[in-house]
View (cartoon, rainbow, N blue to C red):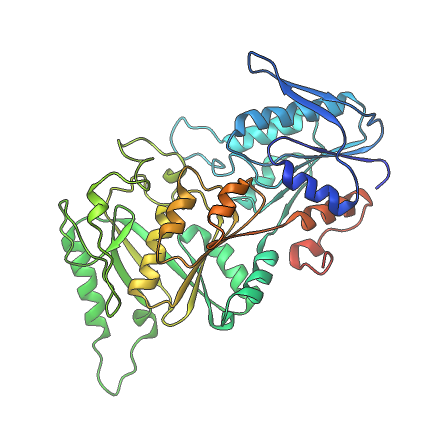
Length: 420
């Protein structure tokens, strides 16, 4: 790795060290500090003239400060006459704001792309962008690496009976991602659709229509599509039975022949509701690919697919809010007959008490994420029974090595053969 320097930002130093260890190099010296008024200061401690520079800076809880740190570091490298500057951003910030959601809104992801290019970045490397079309925001080359091969290998080695498992998308927007993983594993997939509840009568009519469609003659085969549709009600982020009243009150989850889960706590503020009580606006949940804006609003959840007596793998690119994952897991386990539920994602953002709520759910057996986003060691150790963090530093290390030597990195999009 001659004529190459790797700088590690302060957002995810552990991942940066792992990448450097994999490449057999030391992180280039640089001083990152803040003045008393909050301004960021960057001082490069080594010559980078005519060298390839790679800056590793991922998303983090202090995202705005670390974005500014990345931009200043890129500008400092440009001022130091670097030959090529590559921004390695494992979890790209503001990726959910990649389109106009409201009138007079902003496409913040495009603005960030412009900032990176204007600061002096010649190349951007990321993993599992929320929308792959974001690559069009840049006027410089972008490599969007895939975390699916790493997740697929973990599934094959750690999930019993994975050959009969079903990959589930918790919303229609993630179907393409789910089908790609299902195709690579050669297993089936399913989709969950969650919409706002309109009236109690609407739910009853839909359920009655489904039942009437199933009534067929003895000589006629039942329609497979209809038999693979399971519908349930969701109140305050939990699946409830049909008798749950529209007004406030306690309820039990509809479990069939399985033990019920008492939901008396639904009327009391909880960790799950703490970030949404008061009707505050949540920009992330305003996306039509995500859950509705309020967790308190009653919704209708529908599974299209068959997971009975099978392992269900809920896949998404980012795990940041718990309610949609918990309601999907409860529906799969309690109403649809899944024997186990795994929540799998590339970026474990785990905002607020997300990880704690997911681990407390009895319907979720395992949570699997990669280390593209920093998760505290204490947090990992506390929830080690359910939480598994997969190291993806070999993928970024191999990408940096191949890019520096001018080799093709297309093999990283399909398999892990190049790094195993």
